[in-house]
Image (cartoon, rainbow over all chains, first blue to last red; front, side):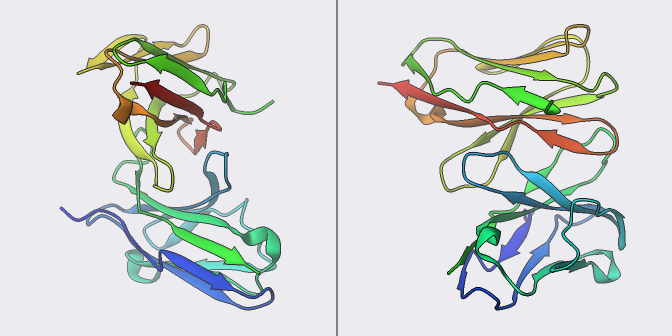
Length: 114
Length: 109
């Protein structure tokens, strides 16, 4: 069974440029998460989807971040415009049973904003 | 107060010793508890889950849960250099997962 797939693995951009990250969850996992992880910190939730519905986006900085999960499978996280402080690893995770389920993470997308 | 607290370490143990990692959480309605291992530059990998009070063993790993004390621990027996990583404690309240900042473990050969 394929795991969570993310792309790109690495991205370097100038500040004020846009950037997008893509995630394909494990087949059959209806719940999809985007997390942000800074160095030396644990993952912090940005947004959680149940199928195509964003059920928790309270921590998503909506002035510059947006996300979508069309058809309830793949998801895209966008930042526009990027700021220096957005440099971090963006992790996508999926789960089959969110209430007591286990999260399975992709390899992450490491963003560097110059 | 953070939802999940862990000692950041670093924790160093000699090869073959027992490594003990601790975690406390603040939300009493927390329902499920997880330990993730994260190697440097890699993403978190689930290694243990525990849902009820007591101990749960899986190979060299034992997770311990005490809901009354809001405490979760992970014991790694016969520690190996390959166990050197950051260990993240995670708690699911039913609505959201909360992660600790992780404890860095180094196993010295």
